[in-house]
Image 1 (tube, rainbow, N blue to C red):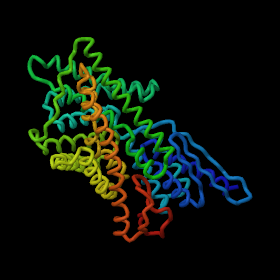
Image 2 (cartoon, rainbow, N blue to C red):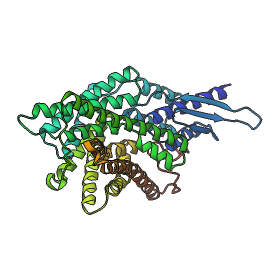
Image 3 (tube, rainbow, N blue to C red):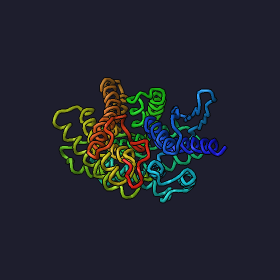
Image 4 (cartoon, one colour):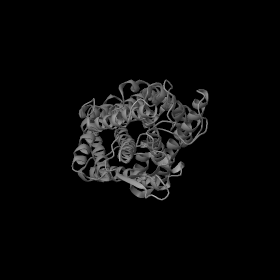
Length: 447
């Protein structure tokens, strides 16, 4: 009876851990491998795990002539919370290393999911504002543009928080965010017109990047590349709907501004030959670190994430100026993020997912989306072809971004395992969780 009771409690613990990982943006292969490693460390072998976008199932059949024991858990809440993700990752590693038993793990997990954040919610809002300010600086905006982008981001974050509490779907939150960003940019342009020219396009672009940052592109591409096509397809659909909400909101904002007499000035693209790659790198570093801060990442990771994000922007612009297309430039920079993100994650004791998702924020295709919308909305329809090309470029950049990071993880992890003389067989890109599923002798370290 005690063995059966422990089996049920082990399955429940594994499912609850998987729920935290999946809701925080981890890929299906990471969730599956972590759940199996946790169950095996607690004495449950030959478990079967099924991961979908909205539910987790785990089963064990103790004997061929006995019915299987099955438990299912629904994933109903999705929030980027790197503080809980990091603590759960540490807990799993401690269990696999034999440092925590079943009861201790259940108690620790209960404390993790029930306790609040070390930072207040208004600090996350301030982080979102700082992220938009960093993106505006990266695109070459002046002090007024940076300030308006920051204020718009704060307004959008508070509005989306209110809509979340009202249980409105994410699509409508993205639509509202796009409308607010466009209206505030147009209003800021009108108010600043007597004194200074405000490049409203940079304000809108910065807020588009903020809205894109919460979309799970990384997990969707990882699932698709790893063979989890059902989960990957669902995540791709979610990402497409969220992006469509941004597009609908911004285009609706254009129409609303025109109806009430607020005009968006002609699109002015940033010129990095004048602004300087160094300024863009500083802005990218601020944006990456601020997103990590807003997502409750540990404070010790902010500096390395900022440095990695700034270096990625510098590399992207340098490669683009050398004649490579934007998707290739972003893909190469993303490969570097994936390559070094694994090392940074191990060095600062956080899942690599925390590092790479934050570091790629400055590379998100907000400018391409805004340019495509602006060109498609011009009167006369003379720029339709250019607008469609810009939208295709945005999709290409998003795919290059995620696939480049995953490829970097593919290369980094077996190299690190070989260097540390542990198992060298590559099982897939691991952005969360342990890389071994067996318990080592006392005194050994988990790989």
